[in-house]
Amino acid sequence: MARGRWSLERRGRPQGGTDLRVFGNGHYYGRFMLRPGRTGVVPPRVRLVAVTMADQVGAALADAGTGAGKES
Image (cartoon, one colour):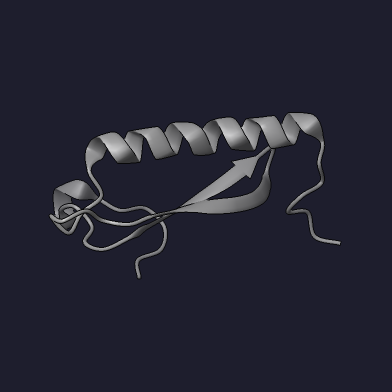
């Protein structure tokens, strides 16, 4: 499993699932797990929706001050 940034130019589209982490205000809140379709890759439209959702969820949790994901 690759960690960090993925260069589409050098490495092509990642095969298999994608782990999309959710952060808000510098805190880790969780993740979305994307599973590939029949083609073996997560379609671009699905990735775009997932990134948008992760961004909105992270911002909402940070604004709510839930404290979820903070280390004790």
